[in-house]
Length: 280
Image 1: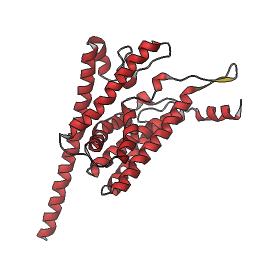
Image 2: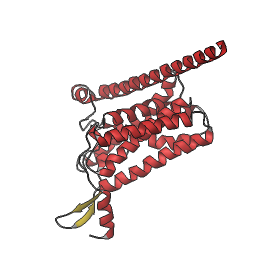
Image 3: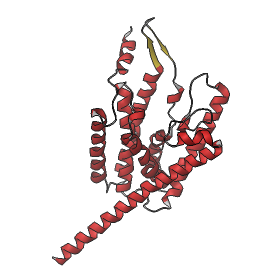
Image 4: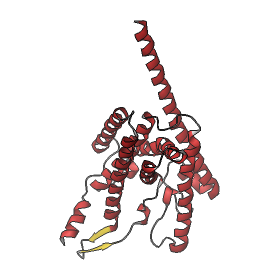
């Protein structure tokens, strides 16, 4: 085995499969909570420069881990014949729902204040935050026994939580329901792109290169998404896509509603403190 093979094999080191709410999961959750609270409080009044640094830090960190993921999923070592080979795993192509924040965060970092940047911020604080929270809490489907990949998925989705909460706390996310218009557009565009990619890939390659199921909504493969996995087999595909889109928008709207409620409670608390201090 060459030094390169030894290094790549080391990167694929294994551990017992992490259990949901087991030690690995709990440490990951606690770490994300601590980092989220720190960033949200420390930088809630940050300026444009700090905003860009935070967005780019998130993007660079998640992209670095994504490159690692692509590398270890592509490299293989045949222990029987003692030979290495490369074979890309198309199911891991980085264009899923939770991949989008990784791509649009650096775009937003270099955009001037305006409708496009605001729409991205609204997406990150609603859809992106939901995606991060969902995986951080219900992590069982994403855990595997490869150490680096389990760390990667926690870092990736944890970063979504940190960025989403930070943008809400710093009032970069519009706390009104009009915010869902721009956020939904940012969501729908990659959904439509994924459908085109899924159809084109299957028409060219069929299933010969494995499962290619971006956003888990390919018309040719099953989805493992909760609830949607039950709906997809029994409805016309366009209806399934519509349910998928509307469902995600509703959940993102709930995230926004909770953020609005928390903001109002904070404002009321601050007003109460001011009144009490004046009364003294």
